[in-house]
Amino acid sequence: MNYLVKNLTKLRYFTSIVSISLMVISISFVCLKGLNWGLDFTGGVVSEVQLADNKVTSSELRPLLDAGFNQDVVVIAADEPGRWVLRYATPAKGVQYPALNEVLAPLKTDVQVLNTSIVGPQVGKELADQGGLALLLSLLCIMGYLSYRFEWRLASGSLLALLHDVVLVLGFFAATQMEFNLTVLAAVLAILGYSLNDSIIIADRIRELLIAKPKQTLEETNNEAIVATFSRTMVTSGTTLMTVGSLWLLGGASLEGFSIAMFIGILTGTWSSISVGTVLPEYLGLKPEHYMPKPEPKEEEYI
Image (cartoon, rainbow, N blue to C red; front, side, top):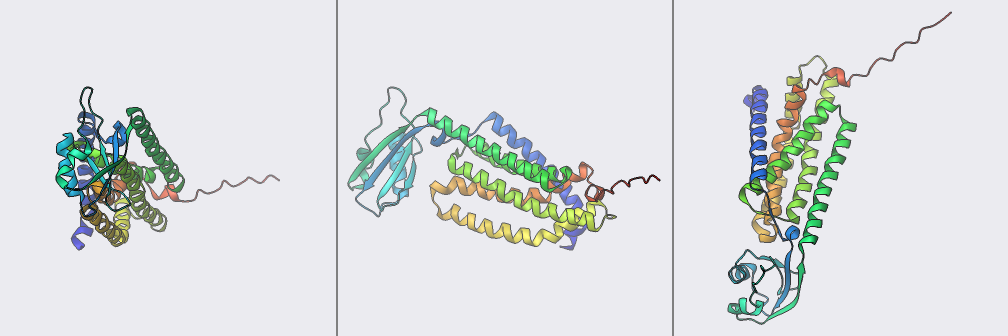
């Protein structure tokens, strides 16, 4: 711990360089490969089936459906036992899918197709537009809050940390071509709030120290703020990662994308609030004078 405290400035600069490099790589993946949009955005077929055997699991259904429809079928357990929601892409022109009863025949149980509906690409496009608008509005609200709460040099560090976390998550999904659906978008919005919380805690401590110790260098102030909030940050991040890790391991395929996005976002959020969030204000020249009350001009007395 003493080694970390003594070399914290070097570590912050090094991790900031790593963060910027990862951001460039992530943006490159997003631009070159793009995101693998899920059926929520591209449209597709949604079928609801009822199985007589309530003990059938998704691990038994998925291989049969993937082979029958020649694609990755999303299998979601419904509220009632034995009821499943299946989501898959619409067939190409001239192609006809086999009946669900035939595909699931190896299970040797009665299969009742309750309903089937088609979500057109126009609906998917509207969802994509609404999701992007929600992300944009969230960022604008956060920018407004940070501008009100902190001086712009300090606020810019927190804002860059937010963008860093979102870009890295998007870059991971672009690089791995994992499905990007509404649950992943929800995770990205949750990451914004979580990362903002970490950044504000450290920024608030920096502001207090700038006022309390104006003669101290900014590097020392940032290091002291990080050390003062380090235990709180590690405990919060650690307990949250345990919860998200449980969702990842036990939540099944339907929550896999959400869990992975949250796991990456929490790690990068903790990382960026310590590195990027404190280095940028130093680069922009944050000083204690920016938080000192300005003296009011004295009015001249005339006799």
